[in-house]
Length: 299
Image 1 (spheres, rainbow, N blue to C red):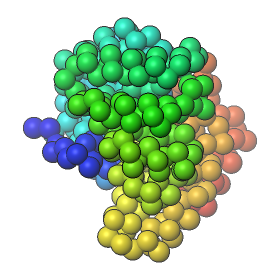
Image 2: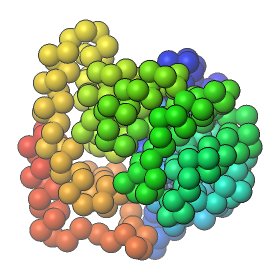
Image 3: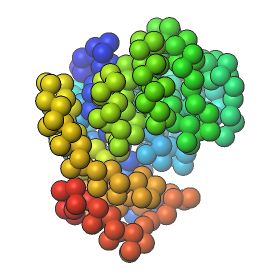
């Protein structure tokens, strides 16, 4: 049985954008993916995003994406939302991935702004609604102009919020003013997609997080969320401040690289990276250890 969705939190509240574990020879590690998914849910996540950018989606095949969704749904789909990343800069391909994810048992879809193509706002609108029309699953938009090159403007978010299956936005725009207006007008459930802004986004009405650092500090993220929603803003701020070195350290380099390094040092499934991503060197690894230790995470 799938977990229970609500309009305010259609995919749960604490989600980790999960890495895709690979074996030593670079193949998909489905056993490792199931073990990592179970570990993350046990640590406090009520949702996982698979096949997102943190899951190295640009370098995994459609077949691998399908097998990964099926494996994670089998492992934790009865107690956590499994949201499948289906975003590409090819609308037809994304729509096909949406249908594939639905067949594989995903509970929802994450679809990123088309990257590199730099479409106009009307193109974004048609892209996202075409994907939403391709399956019966609820959709979380992913607004990250630093990677995609184009923001989803407030008026476009408002229009997209009128679609019955576009129910949420993962906000990595880094613009609290724009987020405030879009959140208030669109009716979309709002998820922080930028760990440093988890608490500030809660303060303007976000429902939860889609986190990278959740691989390491999910209990702390859950505690921050619980403190804030119970009205203990001082405690939430204290947790936020304690986590600042973790937020900083995990994004000194590309997030997949630091996450897989940290997971490996903790003895959790991760495996190698696929090019063009490359491993941290020794100095950067030691800096990561220092950063995480300063935030209470000891590798």
